[in-house]
Image (cartoon, rainbow, N blue to C red; front, top):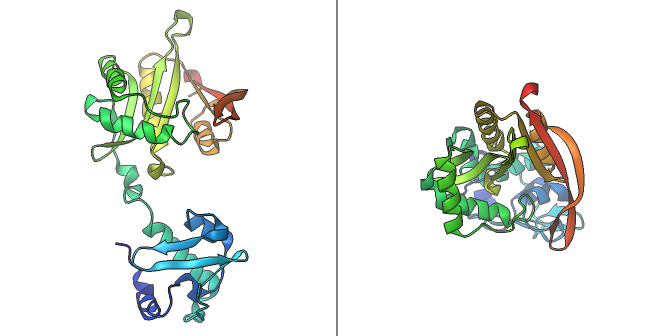
Length: 267
């Protein structure tokens, strides 16, 4: 259950009996701030927190209490209080695992993770943004793929939370003789675990093993509007090589893709 931080418990407890607004006590808050907290569009946003009910309703481009409650702690100031509450809300509603991702193990591919790997793959695929497929392959095909990866000591790693795969990355060598020194990079991280450094750790493990296994070039392709991923690749040394127009299509909408590469001699 989510509870208010100690500083606000008396305030919340005293006021909640007569009003179902918390943020309203501290004055109006910009719509952009509310939108950052709510999953619904700003013009119709109601913020909720477990045990407290609706927090604020957006009116005319500003967030205001549904029942017009006057501020009870004006000494804090509107901006300071709203900033504190925004931080509390974000922390309170952050997935439980997100603060621990720096400690989550990065492990080589293993058959015992087959089911959860497919589950994670399916979640990312259904976003219709990061992968070419829009759903995971049937479990039997995924199982065969994982068995082959284990047998070949493939360049493939999983990020594990408990017994669940929450991210993966792999580099598979090209099969033809003239391009056998090249590997193709693929990766994905479960939405709830993004922005915590897992992608960098997965990629670093793959890159290190790729060089150990004799590859000298790693290639990737990403949607041109996937700016966080592209920035990550750039910080790891990947260079832009080409822009592919209309390289991907989801629900009838075309998207460009960027091609990038990393050379061992440049690392």
